[in-house]
Image (tube, helix red, strand yellow):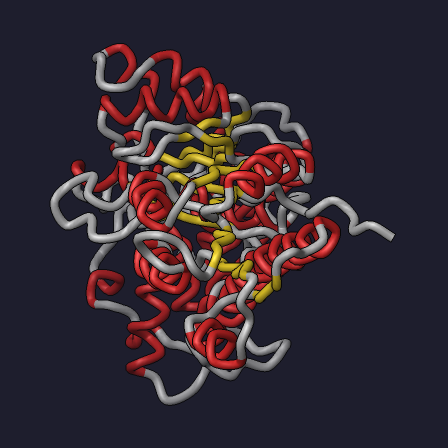
Length: 463
């Protein structure tokens, strides 16, 4: 039975000095579903390797100029991931051993059957596919051990974000995640990838603002040897590394204007061209972007391409700042403490009521990232859970201004909501503003108390 089609189209380089075999391979390799470059000798093969990268090379052992082993050695130096197959009419134990030492994938004796060659290429494709899957699984394991991709929080705002992620994740739509620094944009991107149909493939993150401008193009699209000073070997770009998976472009607003047009071209066509290369090739990549900047304002100021903004803004998810869902502070604190190595029982509180009260009245300009730093600071100082007020950084012991709570007008006929608000205000007054004690007296959870206070503040501001 002939082998099935390979899981992925291979880019092949074939080198042999037999003209008849060259013609056969020009016809048969594309018929097998592969892209092939055919060379008449080792010197021409090395020249082709200098210009382009290949998934696999098929070389004759004895050729004019450079031998097959010399070509393989050069190919491995340029692209360590390339596979190599030898075809030769002069098989011997010595040459087989030498080939294996150079990491040759297989060794075929001429004349070989096309079916045997197709079977070898099938195994090459399967190996590369398994290698990519292994890398993706390794990445997922590292994320599971070090970073949870689950967004923490049961507030209405966080539940709304989770619903949006669940809707868009199974699609291939480009997603733009917006929000202040520290709100968890990368975590949201990981959650989208984990819930997508590409979860078995790599998630490749790149921070557009953390790389020098002259290296971003090479990082994204790759380069060939000699394309610029220091390019000593062919290199795959991160878009190519993410093939089949998800590319996460963090801080997309920092992408230089010249690179914006190239990214737009890739998003529209799926084609990329390495720096210094003449040939383009396609990659199947889902793109998720994130920014803490207002891209619409950047477009108006001419700092961001309008067409790129429309292209990446297919589906926008805005992450709320922590101050807008303070009811999640307790849950987040527990999660962050466990992540830092603290041993906490299932019903054990991370903070004392007094410490939690202080944290829930904080403005959190650094959002969840700031909360994580506070947790780490407190865990260093404390001997055991729960963390107390004295374990928090000094800024939390300074006097804080509080917003006045809205009260129903005196003498007016009160609605049920207004009567409820009056009861809350009275309880807080009796306990000198201590929300945990007020919630206990009212017979409601602290989370419910914060929800009602936030709703009252929102109504007061809009009035």
